Structure formats: structure tokens, C-alpha cells
Image (cartoon, rainbow, N blue to C red; front, side, top):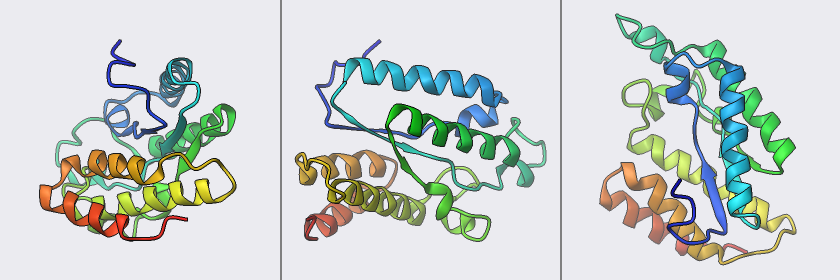
Length: 178
């Protein structure tokens, strides 16, 4: 129960489901957990915009000899339906990772068929950036977008090299956001 210990965010990004899928969690149990997560966030931060990533394609379940975990494409697609349904019901904004991390592109995104590598993180952060920018340019109130995008890129690139963080923050700050 650490919600609220780190301030009061204007935007919150949720990217969950991959480990649940690999652990064999049913779509129904995932939906209950996802709804609980959103509800707790909305209760604690009623004015925050919530952005939710769906899950991109992964070949994780096929390439491992021991079929580690229980990851499946069927479950990924069911989770994506849950995420889209919850976004609509809870007024959250979908970041459609599945539209760019496909069966044809996943090798470029994922270093181990599950976790994004450098190029994958670049593409994911670009998608998040364009989704946020499009959302705020669609007539919604603009709240410190430069500052918030800095936080977004820092968090997304936390898994990548420090040089990547600096490179992309500099690149995106130099763009005109409005």
C-alpha cells in the first residue's frame, strides 16, 4: 500500500499482463486484478489521466524447449480484450502496443522473445509519446506535458542504457508538442 508516497501524478501508465500470462493466470482473474488496480488508482488519484498498454505479440511460448511458464497467444489476446474493455469502462486511454509489436515485427522489439531490447524500448516510448500527444491535442486540458513526458521517458527507459534515456529525452523535448 504505497500509493501516494511519491506525490500526486497527473498521468499514470499501466503496463501489466505479460508475467500474469506466463504464470497461467486466467483472463477472468486478470480482469479482476486489472479492475482492482484501476479502481485503487482512481480512488487515490481521481484527477490523474490513466494510460494503459495492451500486450504486443511475443513468441515466448514457442521458442523455449521446456515451455517455461504457460504463456500463450490465446491468453494474450484475451488479456488485450480485457484491457480495452476496462479502458472504455473506466475512462482510461489505451496505448495500442499490439498495433506495432506484431508477429512480423516482434523480433525487432524483443531480445529474448519476452522483454524489450533497445530498439523495442525506442518504439514503445515513441508510441506512448504519440498517444499522449494525440490525447492532449484532441481538446483535453494540457497539463505540464513537457515535464510529464520527461517522467514517462525516464520510466520507460529505466530498463535501457542511460545514454538512451538522455538521447530520447533531448530528442522529444526539441519537438513542438502543441
